Length: 111
Length: 116
Image 1 (cartoon, rainbow over the protein chains, first blue to last red):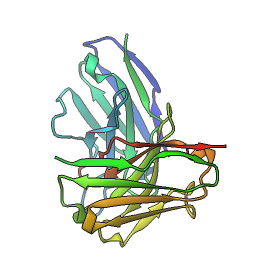
Image 2: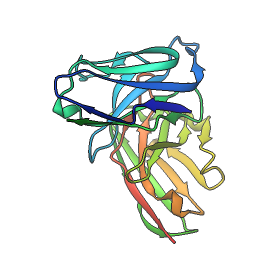
Image 3: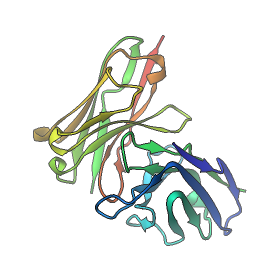
């Protein structure tokens, strides 16, 4: 089970934001050395898009204001300066073992 | 560019069947595992099923096990989800997604509505 907090995140443009994701079981690195914890953003009316994979690696084209960190059961997505285009629902996802699972989602809105 | 296009969604009565398709392009389909993920409108994401490259490994969520069957046709670069015994709670947008070490790539989704 993946638990995200907060579920709602109103942020002023230009301010930082942080989302926490906790796993019910420790997400230890797989034999290949990777920890399979990703972050996805679903913008309104769109399908989810990859932001961060394997805890801390930004997907191609993702601005460097997005960063991921964590290990074990605690993971964090940070946005250094929120912009209007960052509005949407953020999901963490574990891909260590089946069944894969998502957090409940965090809805980010601009104040 | 990775492209995934779902089709086959629609309105079906409770207990009925539907087959979703996902046409893949822009990558070597045979080399990748593929997922189905669904989303009840206005709700969160739920992983549904996975099929590995070569169809060696197949997994299902408990909520669909015994009712849904995932398959792939590598000659057609296509992924399928056969859904039988549909329930009202199966109403959702169904996304196909490509597995990869560096995260999932998603299609646009196909809406399945199960009426009572």
